[in-house]
Length: 467
Image 1 (cartoon, helix red, strand yellow):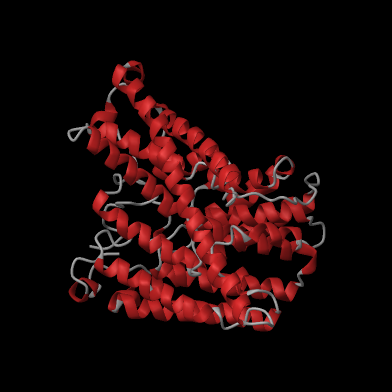
Image 2: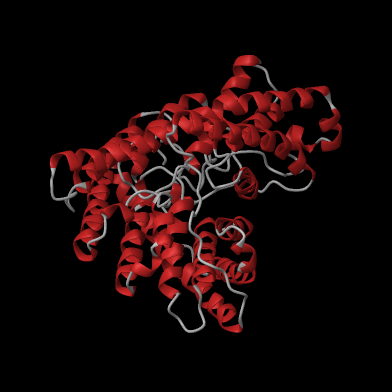
């Protein structure tokens, strides 16, 4: 059974479905909300939001500390002339080996494969799968692979919440597990995307929650998310380790929509859809190779990612860190210093990040959001020199189009692009909407990249492994 065929256990979108036959969730939501057990669930969601968000904050802090130590402090202590371009290569090989070993030998396959994006359905992460998800994500994110932390955090938050409910009441009904797991996921990414509401919206749209069920599941989740946001702020002030919230300190000034920018929005949407298809094609086409020898091939892919980052630094004289990692930390500097990048360097950066992103999707563990946003911003900055184009709408259109192509969540993609630009995002919303709509439509019209088929020999080589 392949990832595309099996239930998405531990997937970012693991949560309730809105099917009328979905068991306990088919009952009258209004009656459930008025019930005493639901009020208890709200209280428990608020309480769970504290430790789960603290765990998420600690995980992100650990990832950031490892990145800083290995890719900044250590090489600067060894080399006097700056960090050499080859420095990330051995760490990416180690990243692939450790991630491959985790997926190969620990239960749970290290979580959901990011090559398939965000998927609806499934249940909360099983407690036996949590160690593999944590370790696979920690090595992937810390050692340079191009994926984000949102998907692992969602799975970890949901799994920890479900585990807590099991410990409190072993025979808890499925509805309670579903609601609390969703609340845990909400809390885990409460400020990661810049707003608790945006993180909650991502989960709800990915899980396909709608109708009356939306209120039933969303209320505990939003409550846990709000508490989690307070915990993130408090821990930031207390520890000084950082807020780990996506934000642009310097935002380019927005301009009113024009005929030219609206026309360019069509082109940007098409470009995002085509580039997104290429990235998914890289990730999906390599999966059969990964299954031949999980550890060796994943280490080899890490080597190629490291060499790609090395080539970028040698050619552009910019840091290899722009190619590696999720892009969340590099995005503010990229936008702030947009005028310092030549068109050639921007194209090179987009190509290198695209290659590294596609390779990471095929074998590593993480989320697809932040690399898509970074590549979209690069495209937007590169398009800024087009006739009639301005920087703010170009960045917004690029981010929106790439997110729509990679996530296939048009509403979330629009919010990601506009909210990131702050108040200026309101002005550029029309262009972003057009770019997102075009990217979403073209993405769904394009043929699906080849996926691993049921006759893939991986099960015979790796018994019990499906990811």
